[in-house]
Length: 136
Image (cartoon, rainbow, N blue to C red; front, side):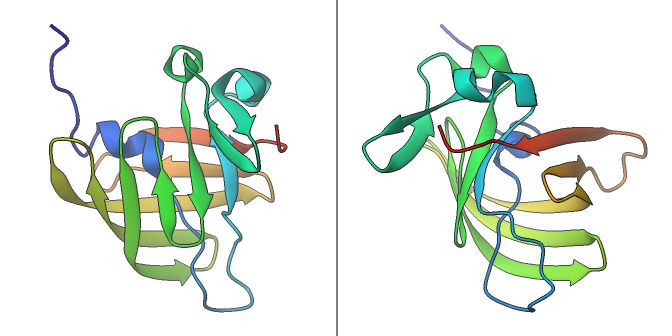
């Protein structure tokens, strides 16, 4: 039996969202992968919708952002609050999996138009970089 590992740390793969707001807000809509070279292995297209491939977590995983929704392989989040502070975006999201609901805080830093860095408040030096993937 696989141990339960859905918690704030595992929601790391679900970060970011673009919500209506300032014209200067960084657009986070799209598919994001932890390794740009694996975009085609993490995401697939089913009709008009981008989804996760069957083995996406083997290739580092990622997340999909559509409006105020963040979709990960195992959970879905809805952004409840967002504050843009220059190149840093701070968010609070309500996340749900098949077994639990949880409020999660995210901090993202815009590296450039196609890369963001997930930062962990209180854990200096801990960061994960995500790259925007071209549409599959």
